[in-house]
Length: 351
Ligand code: NAD
Ligand code: DAU
Image (cartoon, rainbow, N blue to C red; front, side):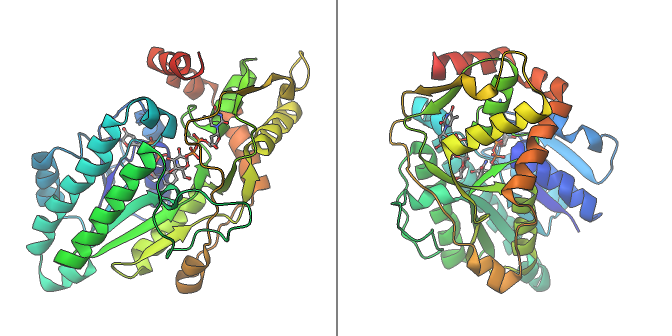
């Protein structure tokens, strides 16, 4: 038995592959285009491990996807590959439409052709697991209940609109063709290998470099944070026991305002690597808000708990401490991801 993973060199995908191979010997075929967000260094510990096969390629390449399915005959496909950063989607939405919409369409069509040719028992057991986001539901008011799986889709950014489109395609391929799909909609992840364009790693990396910590708007926007290995265990639970055609929200019951996240990161750094210049919070700088910025996300994760017995293992306190410590312990990884292209992005976004 084998699984095919897309986007397994990115933040969540690489954590998923590493975790998967810690828990089982089932081989992983890892298809990733190695965009700016893909990093083979995340998978360095798997070098020489016959259970992991890395293939550099684009999910929009139908011939390549057909070939991988025919050659490796996976029992499941876990689809992480995406353009994932909201701010980049505001500057350039085209890549998001291409990968997130056309790429998902290509995978669905290739998978449908492969799955149709399987024997009855293998067809029934096959899964197409689509990894999606809570951002498809839009923005909550302060007193609204958290997002349930039944919430209407109200995406507000080019990124979330492209993910919503991909969710709809996945749903339709189940209803029309019977493809056994499951979709998970997860809240904000954090943890090791998080690319420092996203809030938490950006704050850690900037603080250590003595640079400003850019907080958008009033910093009171709320996100629901989940440690990345808890997202991975949620995906494994849905892949193993989820019902085809169903969607499952995954979240940590952990709503926090951005400014509180930034202050927590500063306080941990003050404790673990104090700066001679004084507390890191001195670097906090309020900057222009993100256009169309969603005010609040929160996940109601009762369905996955009730039906599949999943719960997060980390609290925010344990997860954020591990995360800050990981960045302190991996200065070489941090230095290498800060390429010229990364610096160009910071200039474009923050001036
Ligand atoms: P990421 O940007 O860190 O990684 C994306 C990976 O996909 C990279 O390795 C990249 O090289 C690869 N990729 C991009 N375009 C590709 C293409 N055309 N063909 C093949 N590979 C391609 O993203 P992430 O944060 O790890 O997110 C993974 C998935 O989880 C995404 O689908 C995202 O929407 C979803 N998600 C993310 C979060 C979060 O907080 N990061 C939360 C919920 C859901
Ligand atoms: O909710 C799940 C989503 O979480 C995923 O689908 C996305 O792929 C992932 O990128 C993330 O989206 P966000 O937009 O919530 O994450 P980001 O880290 O970019 O921003 C988190 C919050 O912090 C958001 O309210 C914007 C704010 N922010 C972000 C950056 C980069 C700042 O205030 N300053 C910053 O410099």
